[in-house]
Image (spheres, rainbow, N blue to C red):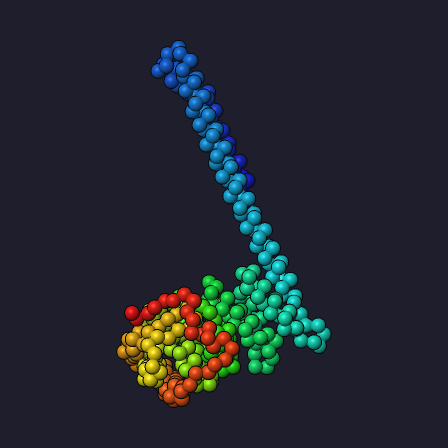
Length: 324
């Protein structure tokens, strides 16, 4: 049954009720009101109320129909815009896609709620074979995918980040998704979580050992430990934080900042105390290997690197004090 047919039946139904009130009510209650004309006044009031109700309901239905049509129009416009954005990736003969054009197309897709398409295109544009977009652009697309409500897009984004993690710089904020820069989303799928977890470790171990990188990885790991509710993940992260704490104690300060998160040394000790072996022997061996490599890496973190943006790394824009 179409909406128009349903509306027609609804109007006819209410019309019958209105006719019954106007015509039948005076006769039905004639004895109650006697020969007075009050029965007609009463019937008129009831009829007016019913007409007002019908008008209100019709207006509401019309508004709902218009809203649905507008939503459909917006959907078509977004789809058309997404197709036009996709045309930006068409290669011009043998020439590769211009990086600026590719970047604008990808970011346009994320703004058009086409994040899954954007991150799928990024697979070919940001790989070891060819880098047609900058790392900063790729991270923005990955961040948008992680923020979306599409598990498949989140998984592809995490896989891409893990695959390219060794080329990232742990001390560069633009080389890590802002969504998980000291934070975490417990709603992510298990496989997505472990891919992001591994990406963080691979990026850190390939970054030059210095206090900047040490602070960054400690706060980012703590964000996972604090916000995730899965005991196995908390145990794995606690194991890694445990190997960092001794070196961080020697740095001489008691709080650490990364992104919008401020974490105290006491909070890191608390997380380290929750270290536990994973019941999955295969996963346990992987975490233990990472912990040993991270321990060696942390022992070489003896100096601060002063680079562009280095002072900003020590500023917490929205302080979230943990462990106090």
